[in-house]
Length: 162
Image: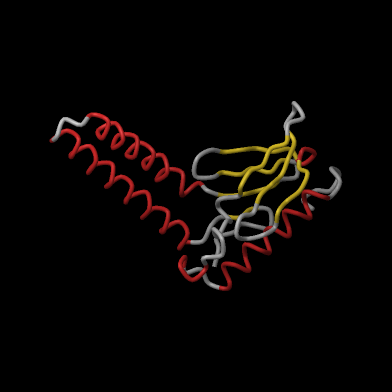
């Protein structure tokens, strides 16, 4: 079951966090292998690729425990993903795509440009539930949170938490 603290926050379940940690460790190992092979054979682009893989995987490793999506009574949804954190005002949200495969917030920035943010802590990735070993409860938790987020995003600003 997903670790959730109230209806306004979604934190990925343990399987998601462990799977992403394993993925980060695998990319670190790959980076170290690239660097070692590059140094042994004086292939400096391979060393550079290994360094990039290692740095990226450390960033990923550190971001996994913080991953979450939450909305608050101040009218801001915060998406803490694997690469960056984005805060979006409720008034800027145009639509919440509630498909658990690739859930997305479509929004407009202050310059009027249309933007989109994938909710990576919730995404299941094209319905590969069996491959990802996600339980029915985990999928239901994700879908339930997306429905609550959509209701919050479409309610008036005066509502406390939608």
